[in-house]
Length: 360
Ligand SMILES: Cc1cc2nc3c(=O)[nH]c(=O)nc-3n(C[C@H](O)[C@H](O)[C@H](O)COP(=O)(O)OP(=O)(O)OC[C@H]3O[C@@H](n4cnc5c(N)ncnc54)[C@H](O)[C@@H]3O)c2cc1C
Image (cartoon, rainbow, N blue to C red):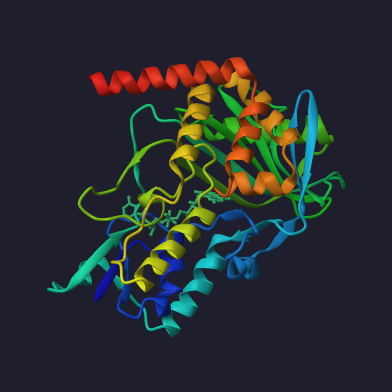
């Protein structure tokens, strides 16, 4: 059957690169009308089963990663599940080459012909409700004036920055002792001005490394909506972020797009129709929504919360939790590590908000 994928981002191209596993589908990738200009950015993910071809595209990786707060530093470690980073543009290009060899067509939206037997999946971005929590950030790949970075350890979150606007941390991926991607990231309901992130990056490098930027190699910016999102168009079944792939409280999406596509392909092999489902377990979505409720209402708890979680888990456990592969024992370990009062307040507020919605 003719199968159009609206959008040519990560999910669409990942699926296109696996079109040979969908022999009943004649896949085409459709560049949507009104799509913004494609921009490269870095994509981070832990190496878990099934991501071998993505690992092959990665620029570099770290087997150690850290979470830092005012009160301490937790360093986690995993040789098996290193944290990888790749240029999105390289990944898309590599998928495109495989897709073209598989006979996938690339067309513009206004060139779609009316066909009786065709189906469309929509990978355009989902819509966030008003007042939704946003993960927003600006990152710069910089060179600094002295060798200060420890290239063996990626810093996932360093909370030693201004917390006055909401939960704020620096994500720092050191490529060498003088070169790193440094991102100022906030979880709030409104996006900040560009100058805010730039100053945060500059101040952080000076305050904690005594270093100044000498060269900006690349800059990227993003806004990832968190929590429950609506489909881009309720009438067209989704794919990727538009089919629930964004992990509600972390914004990590790449590994979940892989899980979503993997399960969809497996289902077609059992004779089921092609469909892309939300890849997260209901319990993980619930835990994430409580976490988001805490971060929205009591953002000052964020550093303690993530700091405790990082110090309680081993590297492998952390990866399993972040990649949606936690079992009940691990979830309980995460809950036990949380500061109790904010978590209990978060659960009650979350239940109260839900019952208000049901009554309304
Ligand atoms: C700067 C940045 C850094 C990120 N880093 C990470 C990371 O490290 N790890 C991670 O897991 N995730 C990360 N993400 C999230 C990342 O976007 C997703 O992992 C992934 O791109 C989602 O894939 P997708 O195919 O669902 O959406 P996209 O890749 O965003 O594709 C969406 C498609 O819709 C089209 N489109 C967009 N807007 C419109 C519109 N208005 N009208 C019509 N068409 C439109 C686009 O052209 C594209 O074809 C990051 C996002 C950004 C912006």
